[in-house]
Image (cartoon, rainbow, N blue to C red; front, side, top):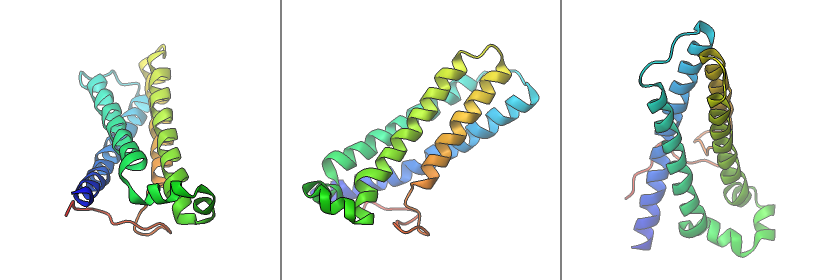
Length: 159
């Protein structure tokens, strides 16, 4: 049962990344277009931002559950942190991946707060674009893609 729950949560985390990436890319495009054209906000603009933040937060929470409670990789690495820091793959999972994802979420959240204080729609869109771009870049850099040193599949199934 423990293996199934780990595989299920890992597949969920892997799948949610695509939703988060899609929402960040769409949000970035919307924000850049808004900043460049000074277009008025649509009715779904605020709702879109809320859905993006919620999906990012859910992804972070699922990742933290994996990291802190479920993943045998991080459990083993945390048992001997000195050895884990010397092994690039263990260091990636114990420190780099999670820290970068949390930092990305902080940037997206921070820029959304900064955007709320903007005096114009154009300025708000510019600030959102900055947050989405930085968050997206940080996520892309520390996601274990199939072509990186720490390889993981594009899609993962829970069985």
